[in-house]
Length: 526
Image (cartoon, rainbow, N blue to C red; front, side, top):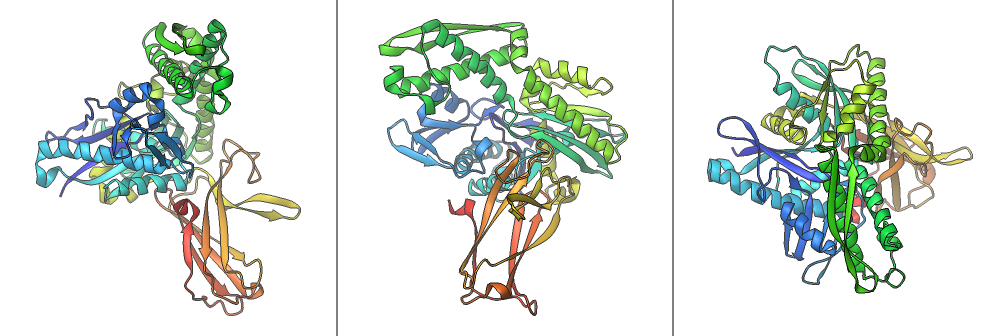
């Protein structure tokens, strides 16, 4: 029997924890740090670095690596990377996650073998945490990346649930079970879940959040201010995105433009971190200017100025939190005893200030370990690997369904699985062939974020996202559309990932139509 680990795979940073020889949970160090930047840097297609080394190298050569891959892990878009040796690399986000996790597994396992020996130090089980609001495709992409990286036994846990597990485990054994709300503000996402411990199991009552609202948005606001001041001081017109950049118009090379933006982003992050402890912060960096010139730029910011920049985002997290509390009350929760903070962005002082203002009657736990709380919870769950499905009880965070014509309305969202539905759950939907002798059928399925976008009704509305397509090829020949129905079973698994089963049936006698049909998700084909 090998070791179990917990992995908090973060947008900006990753933390891996385990139980040491003394029985205590400890974060494993990689590249001399417990906080591992979620970054890759390529010397060549076959040689790459992750973590702190990759982050440092990437600031010097932004074209040779990738970061923030978690935010698009379910997408089929590709990163076009120019390795340090000049070779081109094309990676999907899930491929980047696989390579990142592969280095994690190699590096961490070597440390475990040194501590426990070869027989026990190998990694046997892992629990990886994901945002509660991740789609089924995103969750599947994480599981597939972990499997491809060499983790054979992997289960997923929602980040807020893992935080709740860690919080409860730190309490005195005779402390009563509580209903707690976990406020999880990470680098790329914001989650909030009301969780109740019942007979030893952690049961989600309701969830909320926004998977596009994270600490990176705070950094982006600071970066926008820095860029505006750079353009004002030097009379330049550098754009915020590379899509708007033109070498001839802006009179610097694309490589120098990327270096400028990398320095601006790095400085914005440093300013944000410094202002968590200090009232004032300043940083210097070199800026490439038109016609081969360069200069040093000084940027300073006060905490008050920062709070004016980011206040709308922190206020939005408080609004979502209040809505989630109200939803819990509607489901019979009379009192939430504690609000527990998790995620690195919870360290921003304005979080504490606004939450205390908006949630006056609540006991808010501001711990010193918000950055490692989730990975510790994942490690505890990994230690009870066989029990996870009964130890943690999740609910759906969004509605799942399809789009279809309804009267004169086209692409109208049709719900199949509702939000806040206990997992696992199964629903069926019947489809029909469009024409005789149809050999291929494609079923697109969507998620609707009804909590954040209650007015969203159509497939093209913000808040309704296509998450994948099921493609059925090689239908039996000579089928008549009037004789066949396609019965599709949608099953949301315990971890929120979606499984789909399809049967073709004869409309007259309900017998299953056999054939050599081929099933595939579009995301797996791209």
